[in-house]
Image 1 (cartoon, one colour):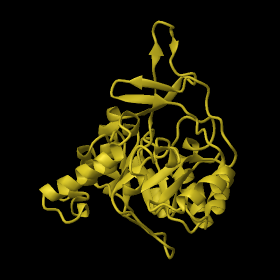
Image 2 (cartoon, one colour):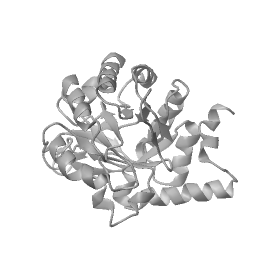
Image 3 (cartoon, rainbow, N blue to C red):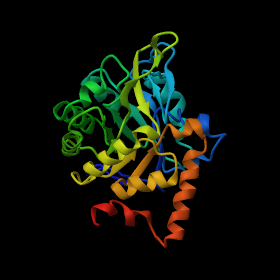
Image 4 (cartoon, helix red, strand yellow):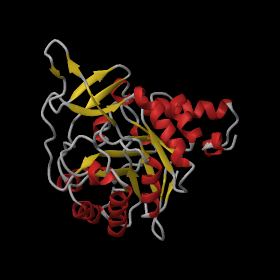
Amino acid sequence: MQLAPRNQRGLKLSNPVIAASGTFGYGDEMSTICDIQRLGAIICKATTLKPCFGNPQPRIAETPDGMLNTIGLQNTGIDVLIRDKAPLWANWHVPVMVNIAGKSIDEYAELAKRLDNIHGISGLEINISCPNVASGCIEFGANPVSAATVTRTVRQSTSLPIIVKLTPNTNDVVGLAQAVAEAGADAISLINTLKGMAIDVKQRRPILANVSGGLSGPAIKPIALYMVYQVAAAVDVPIIGGGGIMTAQDALEFIMAGATAVEVGTATFINPTATTDIIDGLDSYAIDNNLVNLSDIIGIIHKS
């Protein structure tokens, strides 16, 4: 996968498997469990200008074929990330991108400016789709005009490649994708979680303290897959597909639907080596099917 901002430096991934934001920490936590250097890229957990403590507990609930979470973007803030994490990433082979989240357009711009030219940071993922915060994020990603405004502002504030992560909680994901592509996105990531809830019938109250949360896991895969299929036919920038990818077969479905790369998230909670297992599975598929490059099957169902 090649991410290349217009007239700026680009980012090339060695394979299409990316560790999704919010599920892989900052990467170092997983380094003793799996070979993180084999990944195409890592997207660290969402980063805000100031430290964020997130939502009250309980914040996670298991559901049939998935999970609900309402973490609320808990993170150490940009100062600690630049001081403690970026120097670590600078020594890694795998590129690390930072997911950024703001309560205002100015905050997105400030985050982008401060992360620009920081050694160890290879790109940005603009989070305008998290449903678990009181302000910001999904407020900007809910309609094409505001989504494009944030994208354009970040594009003007950094020379880094930028990915825009879109929400599925919309009736016009294609319109959103076209708007952010025209505004300067180098790639589009979809989808983020679907909004949902769960109830404890014994306690007769919502399981999550925040009542609602974001649904992820295999339950949302058919929705995510169809949205990738729709968007891939409508825009010319690379698509990063995600939502319920547990195996190499899941990843292949997204690639055939038009995704250039995939983000693996919830699977990591069930199987900490899911990302590298999927890489192995993709390699085996390529060998078994005499594929020189997986790029040969990107969007193949659009051609049938």
